[in-house]
Length: 306
Image (cartoon, rainbow, N blue to C red; front, side):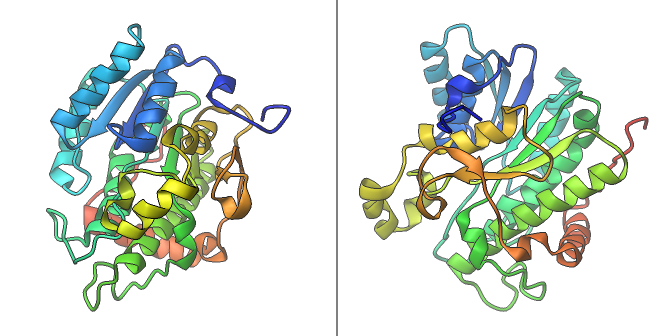
């Protein structure tokens, strides 16, 4: 942490020789995370669904940072076949992955929508998509010294509930309820992954972060949030700092969770934060893990010598 507590991207270590994947990298926090890591010398893969927006964002970064090593590879987290295709393309070309930043997400979708595989869209994209992606990349991660998995949650996880009888809105759908559940799932996943990595003696770390109140495309479904953004929200460059801290600061430990330091964790420079008691419920985490494996068909290989 910076001596005055005001940690910024300027405090990041050099990232030359490091490879990073960032989901949802074409806008908002993902874009600023990509830009900051590329500026420090990392090879960054922008994993995005929309080719036009992804390539436009890539060109904007290269215009500002001509020496940056950045590329776009198609990834739709709401489609398990797309996730497998992305992983296949990545692993054909790269044998190391130092940072997997599970950043992409959807929020407060007004009406019930389903993913290509029939999951409720927020739970399916925010949690199951990243669960599958991480699992399919795990072999590469654990063979990369010092690798980290950073998963983006939200202060919204505090109102989330893991209702296992209604995971995919089988009984009822609430836009905010589904979002809170997906963000709680992100933290349950992070904490359970870290426990499993430690149990087999692996140095790969799972960490998490949240951006506080940051103006991004996530709020596009709420006219009220878009209005309030003008007065209260941070810009994405500031909102990306907890992610960047979790991804690069040398003092970070597995299972750590970071967010803004200001009032209610909504604004400010990054600091270590605490999450809800529910996010540390190991019984619920293990049940969610087993269900996630079943739903996605992705199991985790946590043996380095395989």
